[in-house]
Image (cartoon, rainbow, N blue to C red; front, side, top):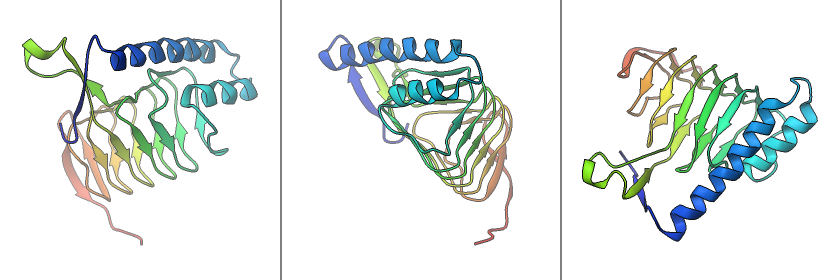
Length: 184
């Protein structure tokens, strides 16, 4: 994975991460138990999950699941549909005018591939979603991926490599189906 970093397990750093996960899991449980129309309390809980003020144009529909919270940043006019999972230890940067469909998973963390190392480290790498991207329902984006400006990720796709700007990608291994014309 590109830009991979590692946190050794059984260390103060990994224990601090685990403690933050407990806090955020509790906050997301509270968020998902709210009445749908309690927008003020939803915004308050989201601010606590993500560690600060959020753009007023950000819309996140519950249920929503997040494990860390402090690694995500959002541009303007971002819409995140129901049932999404953000595992954001490695950092998730979402640009302006991004649409994220229901049940999308953005996972920046994992474990080493080698069996002998899997319990010794948490691996992580950032996900970057540039402006004007649309990610379809049920897609999964893996650590270290950048999705280029204006692209579309088809429903159910597994994105394990960078997506160039202005492309439509589909499938369980990203296949560029066509390039889009650039209006800029």
